[in-house]
Structure formats: structure tokens, C-alpha cells
Length: 256
Image 1: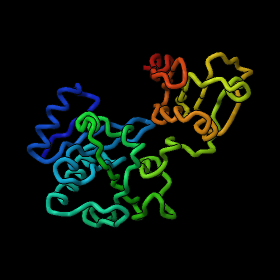
Image 2: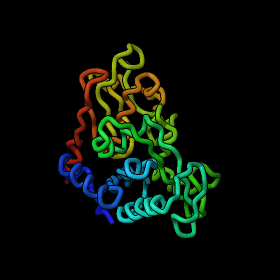
Image 3: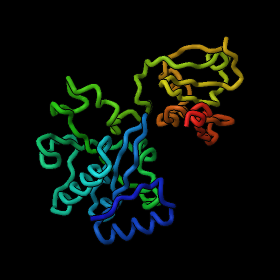
Image 4: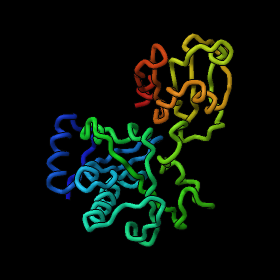
């Protein structure tokens, strides 16, 4: 079937051309995105909506080739006349375990379906997320789901207002200038040890304060854009609403 494409390894025009070829030939294109130490890998379809009037499908946390194969397996079910149903158990996708589709909140689509947005241009498309179970056949929302797998599947039918995978009450570092004076956050740092810093840029060591992560996002929703900032990276802007510039920390570069 169609060959996998890593959308971060091919220029936009080439990817659009290859996507169109594969959709015409196979009915879809599968995009695979590598994970990092912080963010899980994922794979998603382009073309299911155009070809079959079914939602595009995304699945997280699987090995690269398996993720591609599972998306293609779902496409085969659709080709054979099956319509995707959300919040229903499927026993014919994964061997000896359940699967379920959940709808993707429209506010989460831009974070993960970049190549699909380029392909469809101004045409809106629906999307669903394929959820797999742990080794005890439990879904992430079920009691006793294995905690080690929780961060492998961000649930895209929710969490649009708070996109971070961490708990809302996670303690993060910010500044007195933000807390007491209302100055904007212009720099976000994700340390290699997992700590988050939300900084105003004019702080001194004695200005550092500890607050809950949720408090930052409620105050400024644009800080949600840091949700996938990898360990050892920072992002900077000049004002709220400005484009963020991401940079790898000098310490990380020196270690390499």
C-alpha cells in the first residue's frame, strides 16, 4: 500500500504531490511523525475524508511501521464498507485487544494534522483518534490503566483548553513580575530534568516564584503553544501573540 512519509523530512510541495498520487492510487496517504524523549510518535491519514467521506484517523504511541500499518488496516475496513463509529469497541483492529475511536476536538487538529491541513487547504475535515488498550486490555480512562502508558496517548477529544500532558497542579517556575505586576511571559524553558520555566525576561534569581501550571494557561492561553516543547529547549517571543522561536539550549549542544 502507500509508503510512509515523515512530514518533517520532505519539503511541502513534494509532500503535496506525493500525497495526491497516493490518494488517487490507494485512497489515502499515511503520515508518520517520530517521537522524542518528551512527545510520543504518531501516525495519521490524509484522504479518508476526500475519498470515502470518513474522518481522518490519528493514532499515538506505536512503533513507526506499526502505526502506519494500523492506519492502513482501518482504511481497509472503510474500503470494505465499514463506517467509523466513535465510543464503540472494535475487536478487529488489534490482535487480542480492544480499540476505540474518539472524536478529535477541532481545536486540537492544527497541532497534529499539519500535512492534512496543507492538503485540504480551506476545506475543513473531521478527525478521530484510534485508542489502544494497555497489557490488561484497559483504556486510558478506565480504572487501573497502566500508568506508564498514560503519556503515550494524549486524548484529543478533550484537553483543548489545557494541552499539556502534565497534571494541571504541576508546580512550575515563573517570576514575581508576572505574578504581582502582570507582565507577559516572553520566554518558556523546558529543562532536561522536566522542570518548566515561564519567564518575563527581566527577572533576577530572587524574583522566581512557584505556581501551578494551570494558573499560567488560564492567565494566557497562548502559552498552550509550548505544550510539545521538548526537553532541553526554550521558546521566545517579543509580545503576546507574536510567533514563538524555538531554540535548543546551549548546554544540550555542548553535551553533544
